[in-house]
Image (cartoon, each protein chain N blue to C red):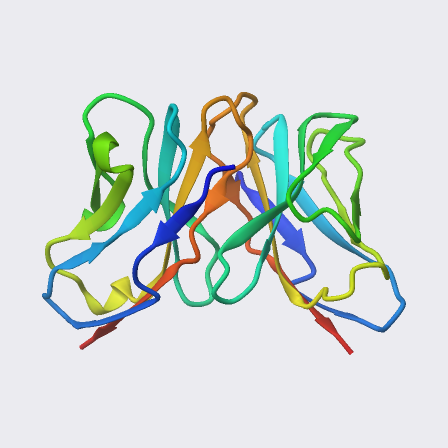
Amino acid sequence: DGGITQSPKYLFRKEGQNVTLSCEQNLNHDAMYWYRQDPGQGLRLIYYSQIVNDFQKGDIAEGYSVSREKKESFPLTVTSAQKNPTAFYLCASSVQGAGETQYFGPGTRLLVL
Amino acid sequence: AQSVSQHNHHVILSEAASLELGCNYSYGGTVNLFWYVQYPGQHLQLLLKYFSGDPLVKGIKGFEAEFIKSKFSFNLRKPSVQWSDTAEYFCAVIAGRDYKLSFGAGTTVTVRA
């Protein structure tokens, strides 16, 4: 059953804590993306990776970090430097190439305690 | 940088009514255009897309959209909505040879039975 999985569905972060959101895909896609969704603002790009061991900052990368050690995995770490981390985080993937259709995972909702 | 604007924040209509959601973008070059839908409790799904060719594209569940290049618009339509069309709808654009998907703020559609 092909698709994109994200875990956990809900995540709670304490002040000053780093947390890591998981994203896995078995679609054999080269490119992967992380977006943040806030009410009334649509989705904004945090980081993207076109190929293994390579990634680029999106529009709102400050306070976040990523790694791309495997083709199927693109974890996102929300660091303590991110001052407003409460949001819905969506991972996406696409075949390699500019302008391609992106397919989305179910998302992780991060809440700060 | 391109921007995407969706004209309506919240649309409320009755079953069997016609739906049209407006979307305009600011980029003057070649674009790929998308409409995504997010049903309550579900992940973001592709409704339809336009890359080239016939500017009237048909998607899933009876939706269609028309690309009007001169107006920088990609409006979504459905002739007769159902209660199950209640969802949030996002217009998105990839400009030229870019990897970044730019989203509108979204339109919440509520269909009353």
